Image 1 (tube, protein in one colour):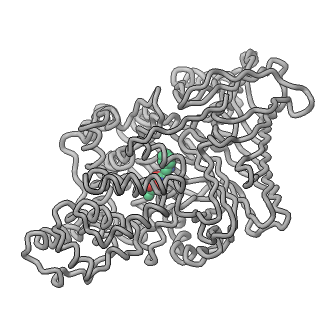
Image 2 (cartoon, helix red, strand yellow):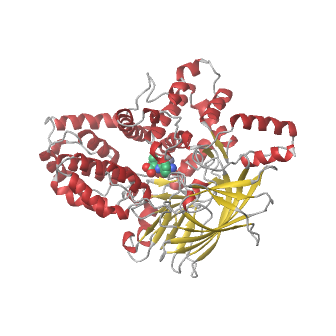
Image 3 (cartoon, helix red, strand yellow):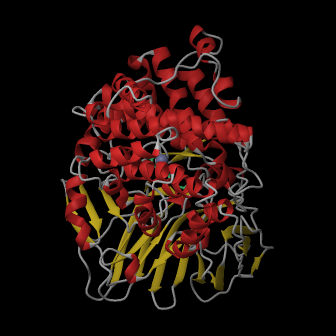
Length: 636
Ligand code: BES
Ligand code: ZN
């Protein structure tokens, strides 16, 4: 019996099972001492954990519901009596053994953040667990778009966003990043639609609308479950890359992201083979709440990166990098979020450096550092300075609230410091080995530190003292002596911006001959607060910022317009807020409006009208910001 338990534990935690029993024992002790409870899941994987999913979904745009059947296999200890799933706002119809036998189940009390535990009796050791269910209007992962919220204006569209803990709102699952499973799926859609998932995907529409060959053969956590359905077309951009988008967007997107294959080659050269087969990108309608989401095989991306000049493709490098950091080696809980995002920002910039050189990535690092400063100001002034640590404590909270830029940019700076301290000759092979050794497993911050001590430098060594991991990981903000990113190109921009603000440089003399969109971004960041109204007018006359097709530039300009009451940009503010749902843009722009007493009312009015266009993720953040009390509806 002991052997069974040990083997199960290995399976449960995604560890390779070893034939040799002493090895097993060691692994097990190791695991027991390291077992971390995920505060955001009811699952008890140490007793019973899922291993594979066969999912059937019927998509109804009419009722805005998914009718689902989730057939799970699992692995359990001999003594396990129950398996616990996470569900939130799902209507459970039945639970059976995959055949005719009903399994007893119990839905626990509703927690507004976590939802409910679904506890299923497995004392009869059923081979399968089949759960039939419906999603509801409160299934927050789903956004059902009406035709006029799409580019084509003709067909409705559905997409999901599961990270961090929204997978449980559309699939009954063990919604913890440390629990991985493979999946297959059949999705039935109204004819005329294409369905695609974080899996092997079709490239053409099936006339019947039934897509029955989805397969994800690599184990993934629930937050990487993803689905999109709509009038979607595919276009190849390389041997293993392509674009999915609404027909009117496909060509534009294929041009913008034509360098994806080069990015994959650069990434593989750095840190080992791309493990997932194809890498495609789905360009979503503009309500998508994030820049990108690293769904395996199929990155979901906002159309706001289609700048027309390929200048915002670092976002693709970022989501691609997650194919290693995050999707292969996954943060064990959301408290270790920086392991996903900090690593990915670091890797993203290494990819961009291979393609475009250091002067380019220096600019990216500076922009990132600017974001970090703003986030830290917020956290130290009004937020919780505990959120300014890499290792988070999100227990009892919605993890989304503590997942800030800090994990990205402080995480990046920490890893960069390690790279600089030990040198790339040592650092790069170390990172490659880390990804290889822990692929398809999960990682805690503590385990990562131990791994560094065992494989990069010794505890108490000169390198160790110089880096001071403790301060970086467990201390708030940036440790004393950190080095601030700098960029020669930006230094020149800042100099011109200052001269312009103080009237020493005339608008027509601003030398933009060598500027890329990043320099424009830095220029606007530098002048945003202090620029005068008449200067806004002359800048607009020269650079046409109000009509900028680059969303990063436009949003900075609109923010400045709200701060300084530059009226010619008001229609553009309204248009932007009605169409774009990317939270990173909405928060500062609404912020600028409501912080200006003369525009607060306009901000609230726009929000009231535009709110229906946003995904629940953005709505939740903005309701709080705009002081709107949401109507909470929970299915019991
Ligand atoms: N995985 C994140 C998106 C995410 C984070 C979703 C937390 C839910 C909770 C994704 O990889 C990401 O970081 N996106 C960034 C873009 C990036 C270039 C920094 C975004 O959306 O802004
Ligand atoms: Zn990311």
